[in-house]
Length: 219
Image 1 (cartoon, rainbow, N blue to C red):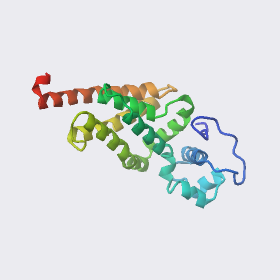
Image 2 (image 1 turned 90 degrees about the horizontal axis):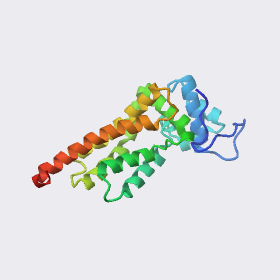
Image 3 (image 1 turned 120 degrees about the horizontal axis):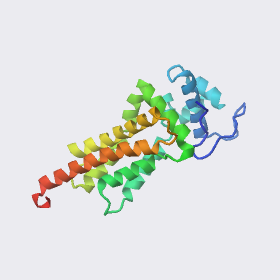
Image 4 (image 1 turned 30 degrees about the vertical axis):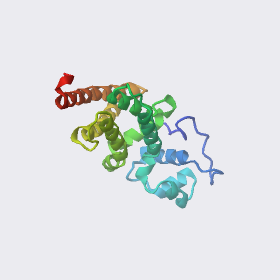
């Protein structure tokens, strides 16, 4: 696999030896991803990542307390965009359509991000430690969806159906990524969107059934 771009939105300049004038979080993450893909996540050390990124260990740990956080470098930005999209969802848009739109916007599937995304998903799919970490890190992502759905559907956000939906969207997303990795396609969007769309349709039917049970006159 080719090396990972420094930033999702632009190709990196060639890394030079010695401490860079400015430290880029994305550049450090790119160096870590390169090493993980080349040598394996378990075998790569933080010392090796610091050397590859041309930064000191103290600087590396300031940005990334552990190796797994390097793989999840973009997550906080994605979570912010997910939450922003949910908050701005039109009132007349169905809750499930709003979630589907928000997830796809937050994934940042534009072409320049694809190499970084492929590296992240490949590592998560192949590394049990990262799979466990993914479930933990994904909690605020799942909670944001469950809360939004509960409020829109006039249900307790911590009730069974909103909670299940939040977890389901998370897993459907990764199923879409798995299908993408197994394909020869460059773009992940069609695979992820299809998986999320099929799940979203099932959840829409479940919410409609719950609404009819609460108010039989809706049927």
